[in-house]
Image (cartoon, rainbow over all chains, first blue to last red; front, side, top):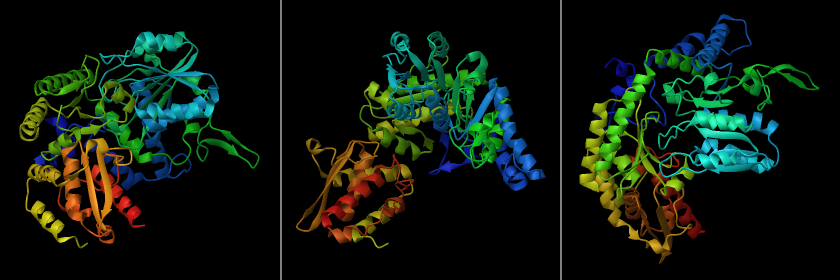
Length: 397
Length: 137
């Protein structure tokens, strides 16, 4: 299969068995073009960006800014700030927009479904500024309680919501959430870390004010991500980190700042990572994302159905817009034990609370085993996975 | 480093096994070696923080020798606790403190010994050693 051939890591063996990588919601594997692009940068063009006139500096700058240009085109966005990932992007909103625009008694709306990276920065800001946080509950069918959501918008300044749950794979009704928030005068931040790997989002048409995501969950390198911001909201943001590259002038008396995205990218940026991400997006251009998403959902649905027949509780619903994530638990065999036993035969899955403890508390559990599928995964791998789980249960449960 | 004889024998036994699943099964069986700490004695003091499973350990000195008891809802974590029990129960505190956690990797039962939120064994080992140091002081 040609697509799988692009990923050298899929050739490796783990404990004498072919690797079956099902931990894609944590991070995805990298195609050879990404590895080559980063290697080429370090072997041919390594230099700092923006500040020098020599050839290498020009190539490095073009490579770094090329990533930004690609992101703007891919997502139809006017402003793309490069960050270290989703977490830094959300923290940037909290510091650069939140501190400048939120005061005591303002309210922020979050959901019980959020990743810790979309909870903790707001708790820190709430503690500092006396901002109120309101949480939208998750219902038994894994949807958000939209009645509570609507009521919570009264006087709210910001809504922060996860595009797709990293635990459940559930995609939230974002179009409605954004519309209602805007009608109530609130800004919207979407944590799209699990959304962008499957869905080519038109940021401008989609309509949030901020959208945060990471490269490494879409075949790019770790250590880089982005914050897309609507142009009018961009103007409401104050600098967060001070340093080189974000300034226009510095005098003993004070400094003036850049007016573009560089204003929020102090210091030497992640140049190789940006070049790698650009290559990853270039590689993804060849895929029919809608077709791939449908194929992966079929794999997830098959896996969920088979795991249920083995006595597992499966969390999530796998509707058409959800992602191919299957979180499950066995009534007696501990999730950590199952993950170790699966690793013994080459299957990489995730266990734990997946950095979403409030959601797991809502579900009445402390961990799940999570199998998450991506472009290079096949139905044969899913069948083999189910067969191994069955064997393990027969031997250990 | 030099390990206690009973641990050396155990390491060799594990190293003789090539199949990882079989090796893990052996760890599971070591769960029976744990001196059971009844569940109603589990508390925040005995909890191994940073372990994915609910795991507890209690360390005392009995006639000057280390005695650890514990339990976990993960068979693997309790099995690793069993191996630690074989390695240090009945040792003088000073001798127990010489033990390095590397033995778990040498046995081929763990992929990583780096401290992390998912490394139950490492967190358990560090807690036991901290408590022995406290008892020794």
